[in-house]
Length: 266
Length: 266
Image 1 (cartoon, rainbow over the protein chains, first blue to last red):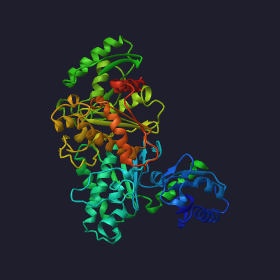
Image 2: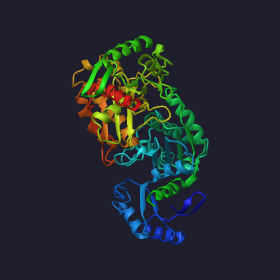
Image 3: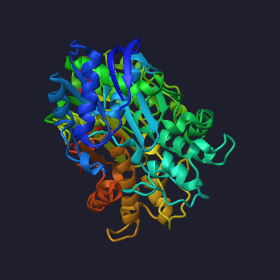
Image 4: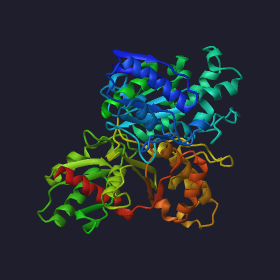
């Protein structure tokens, strides 16, 4: 997704198909040039990963053409503008903190439950980068005793992403999640795994608010299923529990966060 | 443990038995008054928990006499000095960052594996406090398939602390850990659980260094068992792995960290 503007009340967006890196960047740059009409001051990128944040390269992605691609460099050259570069989920948590459901919150987590599970956190006002960047979706959680599904993560099998991302839901139930009714047994199990992951993040990060988005969460019943499960798992040990809410910016969290990133480069 | 001084090269320490809160604080204050000989500028406390950091109270501890005790207030009145108050593990990570194994590191974790499992983290240079404070030992991890031990955590049963803290080792093997030889099967299983916890913390926090201390880690072989298990669990997905090392300050991490805290109050 691409956007040009200054914030949620002043933004034009488009979707550009991800094909080969050079073609994709050229198409995005052409659209941005046209929409910004000579007023482009900086570019922010929230990239799929894994990435090297120091160099702005994609690193070990399964998408072979994109491996070791200098995304920040190519975009900067194509648009002759300064570039700020971070991961897609880091951009999303920044967008939610700036304009969305985490405004005024110094400790929050953004999770996306979609084709994968990604997470980012702001701690005491700063995005976690660390040694590389978090890979929250790849934590291990206990399986439900009745669940014999092997998991779909090519690296870990049954990490949280392997058990609960969209492709895991589809592989386990032999049907895409969006085709399963709200009373399907898929959803309590999905809520159980997401609640186990969220409980682990709460124990580790003590966030004030947790924003959960991504395609799987279009099944809105999940929010109501997850909250009591988190409380049951933590069993009163953690005195106050964070709010668990949908994104305030809908599907624009990452794109608007990239815009906030661009401000830092301008 | 109590200390008086200005840092690791200038410190007197003692251990004062933890009995009732008023008796314990009075004994500690008397020793501190004597050792500081009129030169006391401030006091730092790294407290067992759970605590309310805003008010300096102990909260829901199983130690009934200490529940809702105003520890920071009582110490401040006893010594007529400003008090800085944090959790024991937050003090420990601060001590290690200031003088120990995490000097110069902006993202690190301190874990203690003892009568419980506690953890604290510094993220981009700041200690995580968040909504309350982390309770890292209470994350859930998958059980080893052959392990039928129920776990000893009174809140969660088989959370990481329930499966792998000192009392869990003792209850599972019917003997205290320090009596088990280095080739006992307790240790590979213990390393497996600790490695699962550490892998989850790595996915969530992306630390540069992880310091692991506490009584259970006196079995030094654990370090060598944990490191390859962490790598095996993450399976190459996380490009760079953090170092996993013992505390640089031995058993003084928390006490010296409290001294660093006191500086902020002075």
